[in-house]
Amino acid sequence: MSSVLAADLGQLLQLVPVQRAGAALLLAAVGLPVVGVVIVGLDIMPVRFAMMHVALLGIAVGLLTGLDPMLCALLACGLAGAGVAPLARGPDGLSGAMGLLMSLAIAAALLLLAVSGVNASGAFALLWGSILSVGAADLLLLGALAVTVPGLFWWRRRDLALLLYDRETALTSGVAVDRLTLILLVLVAVSVAGAIKLTGALLVDALTLLPALAARRLGTSLTSITLWAVAIGAVVNAAGFLVALSLDLPPGPVLVLTAGAVVLAVHLVPERRISSWRATASDTPSSSH
Image (cartoon, rainbow, N blue to C red; front, side, top):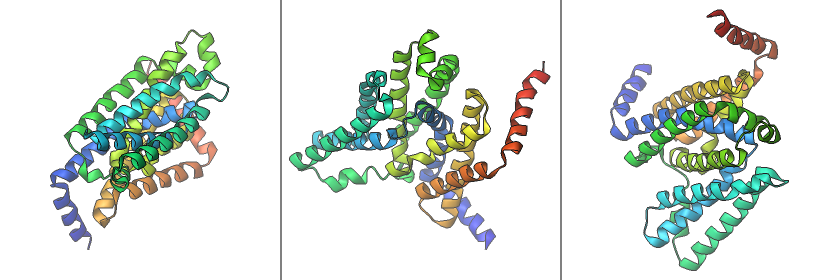
């Protein structure tokens, strides 16, 4: 039985759509878990729901105008991320801004669909994602995110650490908080929109949030948390995709369940054991000098 599964899996892996899907997941594992770290640090958990609604609005615009719906969705999410950045200075912070954006976006999308006569089922269908339909343009987007997101993190890691720790502390330390927040929100918005094509809007957490939640349990600094998140994302994406192919299951739900199992497993590890791992990790750099 196992040899039959291995043979079937080997044949599937020779198919171009499967190879593109695997490459997309590996690229996603480099950039999207880092985005998850930012989402958790900025406390903007509702961002994926807000961007799902904004993406729906962009898709509706694309279907109405005849433009590429997913390109319109990406542009709409990027503009929305930039638009809510100034609201971070308000008393409700970004969480309140995301709630407002979510409400306005879904209302505008539904109104546009109703007035224009665009097929609503077709617009919603694009939000469910299909990893096996990933094309060259999707790979280029994920590749750009895989370079841009870690690159920004490494370049501005001190400023990011201060901002994710406390906005006021970052301000008093001379960090250009407004500009950095704007850049982060645009990257988060575009990343979430790009991930929709892989898993569907409702399952984006598998690529972004869940690896970051597990990493926060294991890491002791922003750098170590980010490295843990990328490593967990790569393992989850590879394992979940292979399991889905082997058992002929939809990849999106399998990826979520795999990531969720990792998060639960990490949280079941005794705190004392994790502390010893952290101590070992922190001692390693010093012992090498």
